[in-house]
Amino acid sequence: MKSLDYYAIKEAASLLEAVSLIKRNGKRTIFVVDDDMSIKGLLSEGDILSSIMEEVATHIEVQSIMNTNYYFVSDQDRLDLNSLLMYASKGVLLLPVLNGRSTLVGVVDVIGELIDRINKEG
Image 1: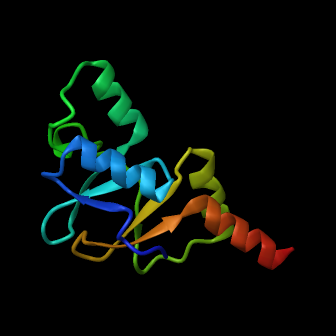
Image 2: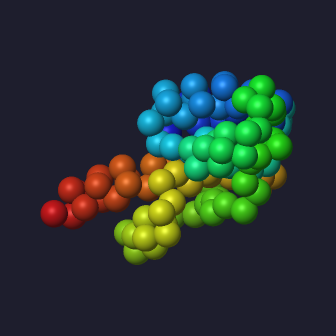
């Protein structure tokens, strides 16, 4: 599981802050959380580009353009190779890991995890 430092942003953060965080994590996606780290949605490069193309000002808060439909896993789940392949086939690069209260407790780098698993098995 990845540290949350480069993957979580508060709802009231600006679009420019979101762009900076996405650039730092290199995964094209971040998770939008409230003050208690409860996940509220995700924000991708595509969401940001769409908002800019629609001439939305870059000073708006990320919560106004975040996507609230996303895949996630529980901190109790065990991801097997087939599950990782399924997420990868759907274009999911990052999976938020949530506890029983929908609090973001981790991040799974789907492609990185797939590579690690394949290397261990091969």
